[in-house]
Image (cartoon, rainbow, N blue to C red; front, top):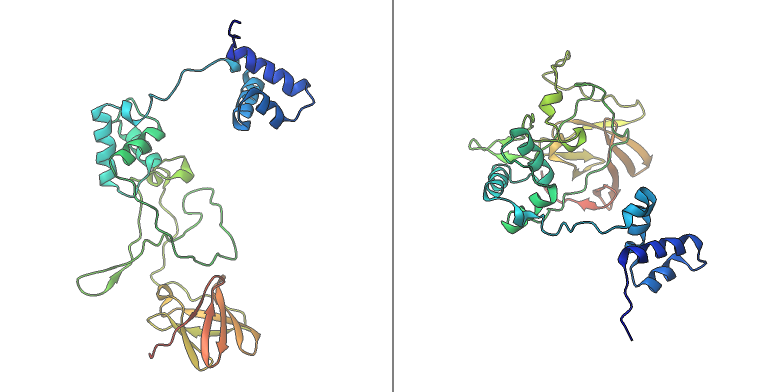
Length: 279
């Protein structure tokens, strides 16, 4: 008995026909043809977009990965990554496209393959949770419509004081602006940054307290740590009941402050912190 010849394109066309005409479910049809649902939807999508032409085999892209790059391309990717060790494949590719030093420009996936092969990929660190703002994000239509601060952490300097660096980015591509450099969209503001920020205004029904230089809140005869980033700043407290107050810095909700057994507890939604430190 001769082997039954199966032409892949004809089988795909028959599959598409049965999808449109047969009473069987899509899952049952995929089982009859020995394919997964993912594969079935792939051919259905290609047929809907391209017709019968979309059911033809396409050249394999398996060989077009990081291994196919020239030594010069790999060297350019690795050198830029070492210069900017926190950048991922998208930003590296956008920067090399701007510099024109990696032609022809590989795909983003090839950049990722090179980084993995060179041992330049590190696992992500879990970031500490921070409370969300009440007002949401404000969309800016032009430079300087909205001002914000990008906090990069802090470092201890030789004089034992701490530095809180802020960045003006004229090199790193930014995904929010189609991987362009923010400096390419910047224009000088007509406003000036005040030397000292104004204290937030609070409702007359709220109580106010100034945090200590170390970021502690003294209230109701007790104290608790809030955050060092708001040292010496004035916060507002809105009473919920006799021993509970909502804590705010301006419009930003910082958590619920509660007096429990003589201790002040700050509940930030996902965690509760009791601090027993003598100030």
